[in-house]
Length: 123
View 1 (cartoon, helix red, strand yellow):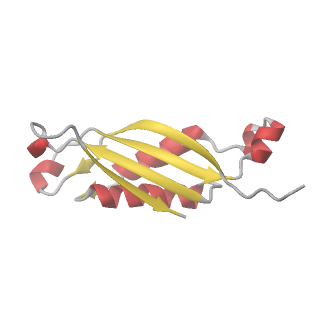
View 2 (cartoon, one colour):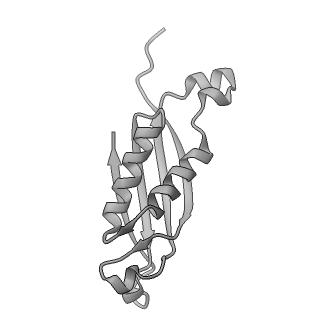
View 3 (cartoon, rainbow, N blue to C red):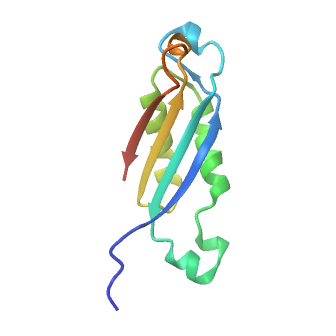
């Protein structure tokens, strides 16, 4: 049998965040609604073949670590938040690669755009 040459993917979409984020102190004064999507790559065959939660990525932990990171401090940039989430997930979960997308509706641009989105990848 040939060795497995690909990684499986799990997606957790639309995680609701309320970080203190923005380019100015006034923007960071109150938490702002944002959303994050997390894509996780790894070898999930053991979890699938055994149907064992012990061998699976715990989705609740993905959400917990994402929220914990988003609310741990203030951020100037969406990019900084996205990288912080990606690094936390790689550190805490049995995955090989992570993509994090963070969306925000900047108050100063609400009349002009739906949202901005930053996507980062770490492995």
